Image 1 (cartoon, rainbow, N blue to C red):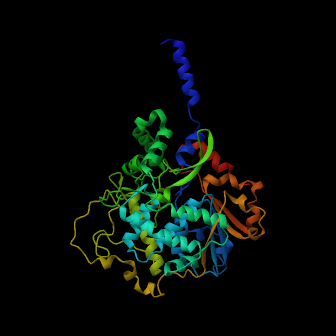
Image 2: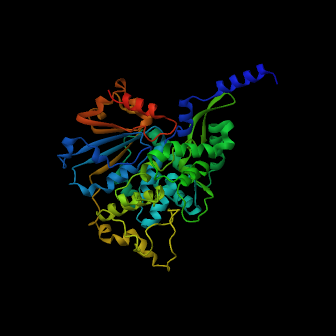
Image 3: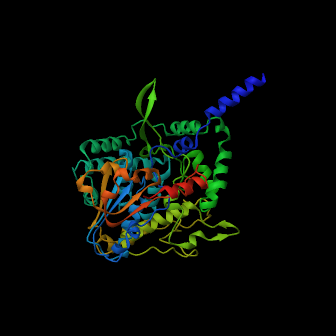
Length: 467
């Protein structure tokens, strides 16, 4: 081979190298299915004058959060403050898949037929795993008709009525509701979904010639980024998720069924023609641990011994879910059981903690693990915080510009939160300021937790945010 041919091949490879923007987009995906920063109680972000007036109503707009856990956290902590006249949280997503997934996760969270441990496991499995257990897939399918009836306002059960009291879909156009219904129906187990092939195709397209060495790249990403900003995310868990798409392992379960709630459509080409292609277009780089797996109220969970965390991000996720379920049912903050004691008939950790060895115990009464029995008073209406004045409003649009020029949204919001991936919608010409009430706050998610961005990129992102 001549030197000229070698040089031509090198130049060809350089020409094919992906830009930083391409790498980021291909890795993060075009449909956001989970958050890229820790979840927060939205009421804690309100302007100071509203915090001093705890009974006054407030309206909050969340622009493309891709994640409902901040809303669940806000709901569960309503009892910590004096009851407001009204709290309205508008969730805006740019895809019907995002809104459908919010409804599914919300219905799982509110399902009182599930025990606390079962609800925690089911929620996390649907939230972050590309493959799920058979019983979870059957449960998701059973929720489809419930959500369709809720969406079409043909309510037949208490669960549907409860959801209708909490969620407002009147701001969605008929076309948008039909699109969400179509997404829900596609979650049937009869719909062919080759999640493993779709995800492998994404990985091959992302890593290209480096695909066979991808585990070395996983290791590099962890040690150069994750370990520095969130060491609670265990290296083994991170690499396992990057390779297999399984973020939350439940004991020694098998995961033969695809998580259809992670399936979406995006614009592509086939034989030279534009076409909406069905597949897995979500995140394959960042991981689903950021929102509820990197921060918690109980600092003991972050204890370090022998230069290693005694708990992992899976423990943190489980603790946060269990704490929210406990507080929304009883009105009391959840306190971690002492390490030497059993909680609710069995060890607190359900099996999601892959690195904690627990001794086998005699089989306990399964009813001891049911949240409706643990919080019987709350079920009778005397325990958890009232949701009568709390409303979730669903909106569909690509950013604040979707509301520009619509009078019913002008001057309505006390707080607007914007995801990092939608920060560009904060430009003046997009009309965000027109949506704000006097002395309102705008909070934008930072880029601190995003991979494929170096320190200078993150610094520049922070400097450009704002007017």
